Amino acid sequence: MNCFTRGARLLATLPLLLAALWCAAPHANADGIVIKSGQKLAFLGDSITQFGWGDAKGYVHLVVDTLAANGVTVTPVPAGISGHTSKDMLGRLDRDVLSKAPDFMTVSCGVNDVWHGATGVAFGPYMDNMTAIIDKARAAKVQVIVLTSTPIFEDAGNDNNKKLAYYNSFLQYLAKQKGCLVADLNKAMWDVIAGKPSAANYATRDGVHMNDLGNQIMARGILQALGLTEEQIVKTIPAPPPPSAKPAATAAATVGTPTSATDLPKAGNFAIKKTFTASDPNLSGWNGLTDGTWGVVAPAAFATGKLDTFPKTITIDLQQSVPLASLVTASIPKAATKTVEVSLSQSADADFKVVGTHEFKQDEGDKYTFSFPTTTARYVRLTFKDHYPEGLYDPKHILLQEVEVYGPDTAKK
Image (cartoon, rainbow, N blue to C red):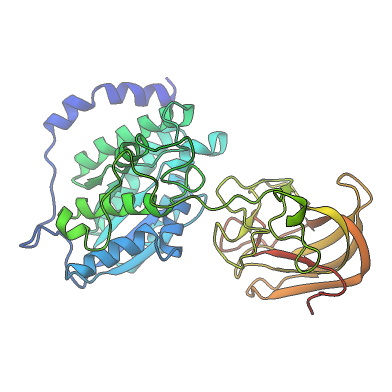
């Protein structure tokens, strides 16, 4: 019997199991809030959680701020890492969470296990991993808040969301069995997405990662699980929009081809908002290579995928042939990015001429300027031939903050 079949049969018995289980819950304060001032609240998860902390409007901040607005001051322990699955989270649970001795822990895990397909985690091992995470946390006297996994693109009928439903059903069962709190964020997201006014992304910026509205939905679900009332939540988080309302926030702009010839810069950064291709593309929103923003996390930053194939390349199409004299880029501190080679060409497929090579120090994220003799080119290629053995993220990811390209009259020194 394969793991998925085993899981499906288990799910068929869930109603009977749930009816027989008693759910132990933490004692609530007089106002119903179960977490107390002075306690620590950890947030274990993947890129959704990482962005929930990295973004000032992210759900982690919203949870902490809303608790504070209701007289409960907690210390957050952010523990989200992009691309991580249940296997990864189990492997770092002691280091990133339990060693910090939190009183409560939210766990958001399942999207990458399903979304990553063959490199994700099948249903059977996922059940084992999630059970081990909760058992270890409970043994350390940490009260766990299980978050059901949010949608994989805003289309309930796609295969990933159908498969994810099994994972989420198991999470509901496991939480009840282990006496955990539950925030059904999957349902909360679909309740809002179902009323979106157009086919565009509504609660996410790219189908997976939260925009402002999505972060509000996630925070609201966690706060409700912690015992806050609607009156307490709306002190910092607006009520979800009615089905006929427009989105509370729009998704981040997509890097793409300029809309007209007048958008092509005659000077300054020729790479701004230009399209690019990667030999190993990243599927988790790290596409900020030419967005004009120097940042160290998505969506402002850039990353390749994590295939163990080198060299890797990214090629930027400047949309016109222009005289070039310098390129500016920066690695991300503690990333595995090492050697960067820059080459130029008039053709996307051939005749690339190497104009510079630089080896980044792993502990630094300072900008580096490649200066070279003026060369007319349309295409700019960065080649990564190697990487450091370890980094802040999986070392097979190559990460950059931004790429800017200048002509001889505006070359950055």
